[in-house]
Amino acid sequence: MSFQRTIQQTQTKFIRLSANRCKGCWKCIEACPKQVLGKIRKGPHRRVQIEISDNCTGCKKCVNVCKYDALEYLIIPKTKGDGRTFDVNADGTIMFRL
Ligand code: SF4
Ligand code: SF4
Image (tube, rainbow, N blue to C red; front, side, top):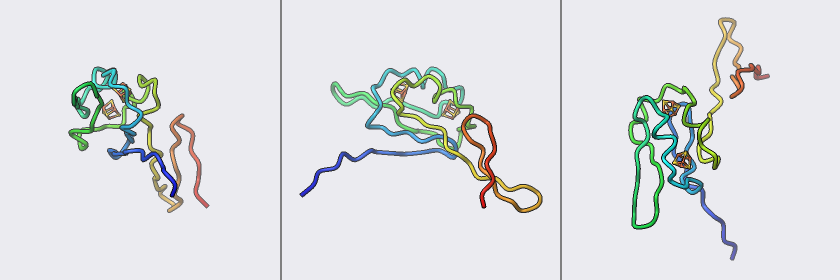
């Protein structure tokens, strides 16, 4: 039998939270202008959860302050007028899908 550590992930349209990596420093909550994130406290355990997913604008402020890789920016596929689909990478560069 093998044991695998499960990463608990939840997401908005723009960001993904891997809750197992969260250290509960609350920096992302302070950084978020839209009150998307909230606190969970169970005894000594602290972590963030996504509370109002629809409020997320993808501003990345939370991603930029997290030092533990618990938050990541999702690459969002978009379509040009000519029908070609492309991804916008986290650094703003564009990659067309073949
Ligand atoms: S900044 Fe990262 S480690 Fe800190 S509370 Fe937010 S998700 Fe957790
Ligand atoms: S991307 Fe911006 S709006 Fe969305 S949760 Fe992070 S800080 Fe809040």
